Length: 167
Length: 328
Image 1 (cartoon, helix red, strand yellow):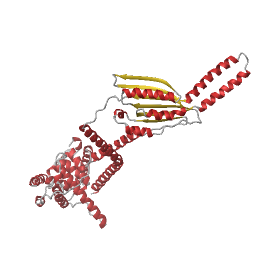
Image 2: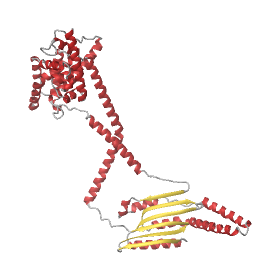
Image 3: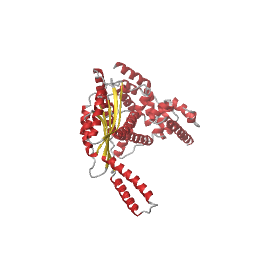
């Protein structure tokens, strides 16, 4: 029991920043990302006995779990919005440094204008520097589809940054 | 990341994103570090992998085809025509070596043997294969069969008799007995040994005989009015036809019984305990295989439907997730 706990603690220590960064990009909201990160690790601890290192590394497995947690959150939010009949503003505030300290305002705004699907592939492949296969496994798509999605996301990001600079 | 993915100003953006990646706050670190000890693992059910489900479904499908093929292959085929009727009763080949054939004997004796119709002209042929105990019994049975044919008013058409090293042997006797006595002949013959095979064929030749009779009558009428030049040719045709007709009537009045007698190929040794155990185990295994095969046949379509449903549900879920993330 102690060995398992130690293994989990080590994995959590090593990959907490990665999971958090991924969830920040996926949700576009720091507070939500923090909540979801905590929930992800709680789930991970609960399911640690199911983790099979032969199938994927701990970082990939934790990212998969984080994605599943985030999707549950998005579904709950969508249901809540439908029930309440209102739509929260999706644009983050100008002043908030959501996606990282020291990012240029143009890039910050451009990231906010991307969809969650586009941001998550950027997070996995660029920020977390996951291999194509591992990122594709997290997203549940093929490596080719992952590569295409990243390419399109980067093009859109570049276009948004250029538009922001011109403005 | 491949160079193709980096286009235009992307390289600078990538560097900036990596340099300013979000970092977890101290509060979050403490929250995660404070997560409680792992709860005792509960019993949990996890769905089998997609490959396993597809593999099972494919196996079930193949099993269905195999079972269908086997069932069709073992079904009894019976043919019965308006003119000829064939009834065949035979024992499996491996029963030939069985030392005790009483059960088979009783079964075959109970099988109904078609009888010739007294009002029709029919060719009757019966084939009987019997096993006798040894060479002495073979000789006795052959002689009794020949005597029987004569006693019933028939005759022996052919006899072949052979023995090897005085231990094994066989005989083939072709008997011709009056059609009216064929039942009695068969009843007596089946008592000469253990029945291995019995086959009866009846061919109705009434129409053919009628046709020949009409042709003969016609030729006779022609002969009465024929000129001296035509008469010899007609007479020759009439003689040929009458001989043919007589042959037909003779073949229909005497049934042909082909009796084959044989001694056992080798005395089967009484199976030992090990062999009996192995036989029993083989039988049980075969039953289990049959059961599994039938279960797969029944469950196969359900597994296929289940697999398709599972795949559809996954596809729908994936699509829903994608939409959700595109809107978020």
